[in-house]
Amino acid sequence: MAASMVVADDEFIPLEPEPGFYKALEKCGQKIGLECGKSVVKAILKDQYISKKCCVQLVHKMGRSCHEDLLWYLISQPKIGANATHVFIKGLQVYNSCVSKVGLEF
Image 1 (cartoon, one colour):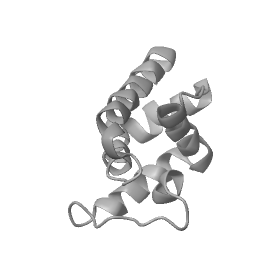
Image 2: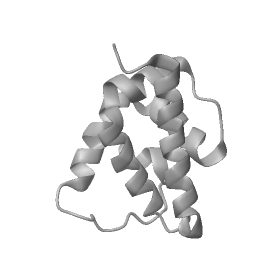
Image 3: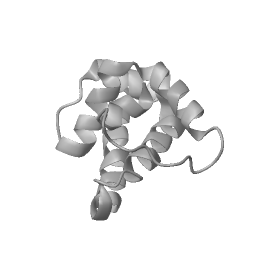
Image 4: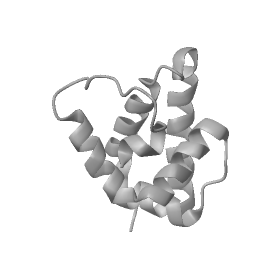
């Protein structure tokens, strides 16, 4: 599921940066769910709005560590290319914006 949030069916998925990375990423994706996972990716790549519901899922279910793993995967995609730094920074901004919306306490 995590890879399906980021790449189209016909795109190449690069080799794992370390053994077990994609399995861990898959578990991260399961924590947030496909709908909110896609919402997070769209917020990062297309500056789209992310709902409070999805912010709760991101901050309290998925967590920062999983979010950063998703960002590393996202910037490893060839189509991101020269925008990798911008995408990573935007991803951190999306996470921090969600923390502002919903807080760290649950």
